Amino acid sequence: MVFKKKEKKVPAGFNSVNEFFDYLYKKEDLIWMGQNTNHLQKDKHIENALIEAAKKRDYCKYPPPEGFPELKELILKDLELDPELQDIQITASATEALYLAISSVLHHTYNTIASDPGYLIINNFANRFGNHVKEVPIYNEDCGYKLTPKLIKEYIDMDTKLIILIDPLNPLGRAYTEEEIKEIAEIAKENDIYLLHDITYKDFSKNHTLVAKYAPKHTITIYSFSKIFGMAGLRIGAVIASPDLIRKMRSSVINDLGTNSLAQKAGIAGLKSKNEWINEVKETCFKNQEIIKEAVDETPGTFLPVYPSDANMMVIDVSKTGLSPTAICDYLLKEKNIFVREGNYTSKLFANKYIRVSYSIPTEQILVFKKEFKNAILTLQEENNIKMKD
Ligand SMILES: Cc1ncc(COP(=O)(O)O)c(C=O)c1O
Image 1 (cartoon, rainbow, N blue to C red):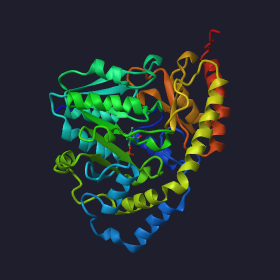
Image 2: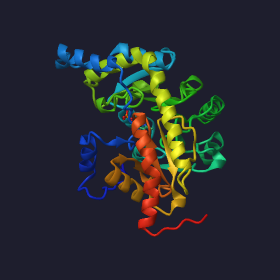
Image 3: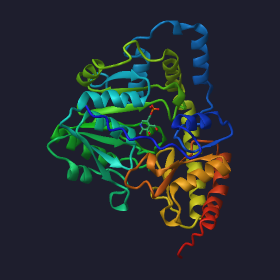
């Protein structure tokens, strides 16, 4: 097995990537728009469940290996999936779920279809366990910035075994319509291919359709507690698929002694209270998007390829400013205390075109971004003697 993981770029001024993230993590006043985590979660249910579970000291025991049955049931209920057709394994994050799923369905002769831009960690796993990944360029209006059924049909061949659907998509925030989902489900069934439906950002979208409803035997659904629940640091998620496929995955689970019991208790509390807080989080995100759009509209040379976004992040195209995404990100972090992400984290082909901004943070901070974004572009252009054409 050849592991083709791309080495991470060490940001300027740091000795390692770890040192960079440790610096960001500890910087309490940082405007956190560089990772799609949710800083709007103010509900007390999750926090209280963690405190209560810690006080009981139940953590001296191992939890059950597949996850607490209550949590498994609540996730399936949340997704309105039939427990007769779909089984679930709790994992330490969506990342672990992705690894488990991909290692179980691919072998060295199979190829995978994914999009560029996309979430490259998934492609790394597919490269590791399969033959290669076809990274389909989707950064254009013709396909609506998503991996359409038409593109999938164009790229599929006899050895394709897996299609990666990130929905809504990190980084562009595009989601699929019900019609597209039905069409993709048919492609999977006709060609006996697995669909990996990563729904990490599902709850930020206006409408969302699960492909598992239309192709239950061919779908692997990846679930995360990191985003809408605001629990990224607790590292908890799940993989959902047909009982046969989950049985196969269970034979290669690494963490046979279960997943962090405190994180699971927090997940249970989050699912039970979700209806009480989800609308407020979503509304703030929509409002924040509008403010970012205003900032982009008043900044020459920049535009939003996808607006509105169905996720808690979006892409700002900066290719006509004459500046590199790296220069913009470095400036905003060092000079303005604003963390945003350069394109190379989510694209190989279009990395030089955009930065990604997340906005599930307080609106006051988004207003700071609005004030500083245009200034940053103009200042950097002046420093570098860049004159834009009209
Ligand atoms: C599409 C996608 N899947 C999975 C993850 C990771 O989720 P988790 O924190 O549950 O590992 C991310 C994180 O940004 C993501 O963007």
